[in-house]
Image (tube, rainbow, N blue to C red):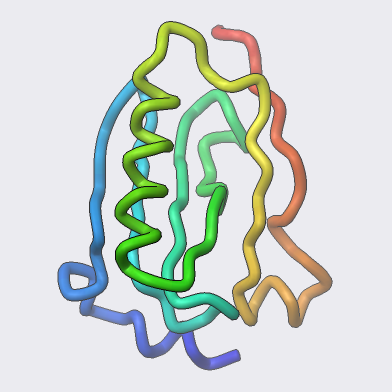
Length: 110
């Protein structure tokens, strides 16, 4: 549960890629609080009230690089995905019954 402490003040060392595209922030990095060592999170105002959604987990940096590119391509299209699924496996999420996990529908533009 305290694996998250290993991520404090070292983002630049853990970062695989961070891209701003299609109104989204897509971030892929190494993590210490999950069952897998890498994850991609997406933050977009039209999903989950603008909170982060962990969309993919990886076993290696190479997989994370490929996965990041996939998400960037998806958000570079004219239409946003109709929903995103949070696959968060962080120790925090597990300790509190899957907090954050779920499907998030694309909200209409305001």
